[in-house]
Image 1 (tube, helix red, strand yellow):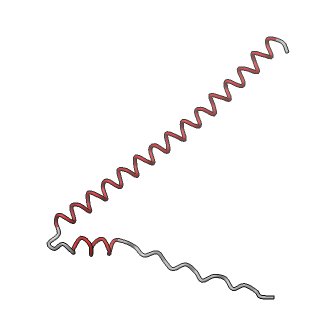
Image 2 (spheres, helix red, strand yellow):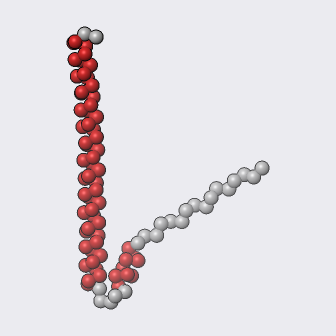
Image 3 (cartoon, helix red, strand yellow):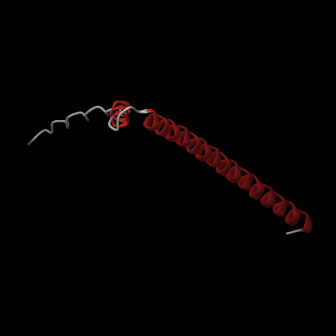
Length: 85
């Protein structure tokens, strides 16, 4: 292998390495942004819950309010009938 080919091969390898590193860091950056958004949303919801509890006239009021805000998931469909031989 000549010196020219050797240098070109290493340039290509280094270019590929930096391209992969850039994609990896972009993924980590997106994940961090999603985590920050989740934390902010959780804090806002927690703050609203605490404010509702402090503003309640009776101790049971926040519990009733929380039960109403929880949505019930639909029942799963029944299992498919299997053909018996």
